[in-house]
Image (cartoon, rainbow over all chains, first blue to last red; front, side, top):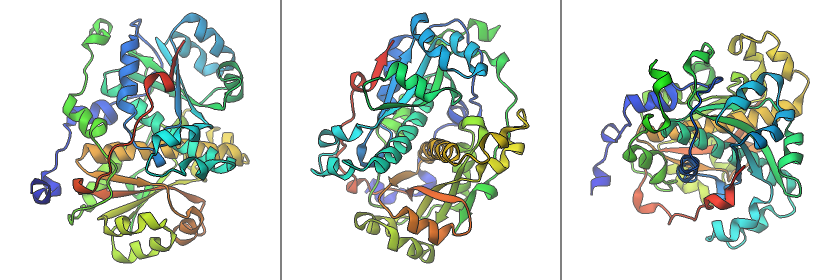
Length: 206
Length: 206
């Protein structure tokens, strides 16, 4: 009864302060305070982000959290020059990747279709598109979940993907997508906000 | 001073009820109540989601909101059989797409690099990867922003992308990515939740 009586206007809207934290005032960070990110917080980000939807529940994202100097040193040679210093300074750098063998898990993940795995087998183009689409959706859930827990993010695409894959994912079908620094950002080092496209440039009402 | 004194433990975490609304309890909807979604709400979703980060501020997403029976009828022939009834019943169906000509806007969108457009020109593979990665990130921001405003979402990948592109985006470089029904979901028609991969299967700590 309650559902049938619910009108759009009565639906719960999250508060403005939360919208600011997640989207409106959140910024990509380039400088980092010397505050560690506990492993328990990394786990909690995942435990929130994992509930975001993916097509056929494919969940192709794979996350590698670089927390130590030794792990960061393995990444360093593959970073674009502008990304080196900030990445070395970040408490944690996540390699956001996706597994092109994601469909091996579908008998468990998508039980209502016993042939879900067969939809992808032998179709590398479909596998790749599905992996990058859904791995990127999950990458965005990850960013928003981190912000929801009060962390700042510094996502980056400027790196040698093939080099990172050889260094971190040799012998697997895991492919890097983007990097994301995590921690408490130094607000003094945030760039001026770049413009966003307006509604009329992006959206069409039919 | 305040920033330097901020510890991770003191950082603002959004409330559990909001985490439930955005992620933990939010579900993909298959049935829809007969409640319209005002155009102003569609605009507000975009005005929130547009602030999510994209690489080089590329913002490739393009959104087409199908609100009328005539617009839905144009989509219908390209839907997978399981997606027809729920999509016809949804108050709004968004075609989440990306523009492979996104780099034409970079002189305005990424002013700190006067050559940003040139990074992509004549590189179709880089353009395509950048468009689907960032268009999908923005698609996820869109889903979370809609949930933040109290809407329910029903994202879907089961449709004929080429057919939709010919019907809606002929003569442009815009390519469909996924579809997302929007409205007030009928909670009685939600499927049982499918399992999520656990932290150890997805995440590596280095």
